[in-house]
Amino acid sequence: MYKFNSQSVFYRYPQGGIKSNEIITFKILVKRNMCAPELLIEKRHDYSRTFHDKIKMHWISQEKNYDIYQAMLSIEEYGHYYYSFVFDNEKSKDYELLIYDDKYITPNWAKGGIIYHIFVDRFFRTKIIKKKGAIIRNWGETPYYLPDKKGEILNNDFFGGNLDGIREKLPYIAKLGVSIIYLSPIFEAYSNHKYDTGNYHKIDPMFGTENSLKKLIKEAKKYNIHVILDGVFSHTGDDSIYFNKYGRYDSIGAYQSKDSPYYDWYTFNNWNDDYVSWWGIKTLPEVNENNDSYINFITGKNGVITHWQKTGIMGWRLDVADELPDEFIIALRNSIKKNNKDALIIGEVWEDASNKYSYNKLREYLCGKQLDSITNYPLRNGIIEFVKNKDCTNLNHIMNKVIETYPPDTVNCLMNVLGTHDTERILTILGSKRVPSSRSEMA
Image 1 (cartoon, helix red, strand yellow):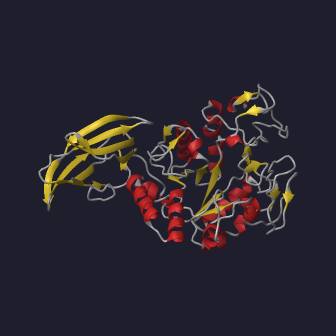
Image 2 (image 1 turned 45 degrees about the vertical axis):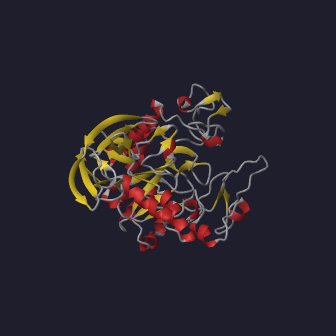
Image 3 (image 1 turned 180 degrees about the horizontal axis):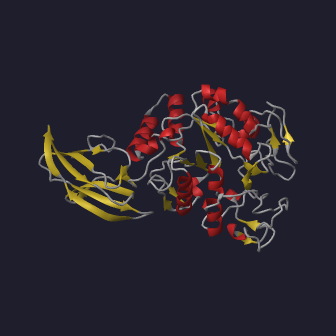
C-alpha cells in the first residue's frame, strides 16, 4: 500500500528532534492509482492528543509501481507530537516527533568527550581524614555491607578516598583521554555514598574542603578536564541541618519542630516519626521540590547552585531526574545557565528520554528547557545484549531510535555508560557465567 521509513533522511528530513519553526520535509511512496495521502499532525499531552494540522501531500515523482508524495511544514510550539498518513478513511501508524525550543544548544566542550565517573571514597587517598563514627578500612579490604542487629545497613565504612587523591591522579586520568570528571556526591553527609546530604553548602570533611575542590578544578583545567558534580535534590539525609533527626546539627530541623524553617520542605503523615521518604528508606526523607522556600534555597540568587558554580565546576548530573517536577528542573536549568551558559546538565533517566512517562506525566526533558543530556542506559543494554548474544537487533533499534527522536545537540553529548554505581560492573556482566544475586557474592 505504501512505503515509509521514519529513520531515513529520504522519507523524513532532517532526522532527530526538530527545532521549532524548522522546515520538515516528509515523503512517502504510495501504490499507483491510490488517492493522494494527507499528513496528520497531532499534539501529544500526558495521555491524550489534540489536532494540530492536516496537510494534503502533493505528487513529486514516481518509482516503479509507486507514486512519491511530499509535504513540507514547520511547527512553532515545542513539545511532543505524532504524525501519520491518512488515505481516505484509513490511517497509518503513529510516528513520534519531538520539537525543541529553537534557542536550545548544548556545550561544545562536552560533545564527543570521555567522562570518568569517580566514587570519591573508593578512588585514591593521600592521607586519611578521620571523622567521628566512621569506620576506616584498609585499602582493598572488602566493604562492610551486611545489616546490623537492627537490620539496618549503615554505609559507614570508609576507605579514605578524597579530592586531593583525585588531584594527584590527574596525569593518569588525562592519559586515558578523559575530558570530564563526574564526581559522586561530595557534600557533607553521614554515609560513604553521600546521597544522604547533610549540608548542601559544605564539602564532606573526609573528602577535604571547598579549597580542595577549587584546587582540583584549577589543576584539572591544565589537562583540559572539566569537573561536574552530582546534584541530589529529591531528598536529603535524616541526619542533616534540614531534618536533624538525631540532633547532631546546631539547627532546628523539621523532625525536631513544626516551627522549623525547613518543616514545609518535607511531608509528614503523622509528625514526627511517620514521614515520606525516598523509596521507603527512612534515612532519606523526601523533599517537596514545589516548595518555594526549597526552590529558592537551591536555585535562588545565593542558592546552592550559584555557590558551587562559583568554584568553577562545569555542570551537574541530576540524581533521579524522573522524580523532580518539570518546574523544578526548569528552575535548576535557569540558575545553572545564568551562572554559566556553557555548563552541562545531565539527567539520570533510565529509559528513552524522548517519550518518557514519569508519575503520569509525559516529560519534556529534551524539549530545550530542561536537560542537555541524559544517562544513556538503553544504549548500555543494547551493547551488553550484542556482546553476550552476538545479536545486534536491539542495539540497532536503540541507536536508530535515539538518532530519530533526540535533538542532535543532545545526541552529541549523551552520557553513554557501560556501568555505574547503580549497575553491576561491566566485567561482572561479561566475565561471569552468571550475575551474582546475593550481597556476599557481589562483595
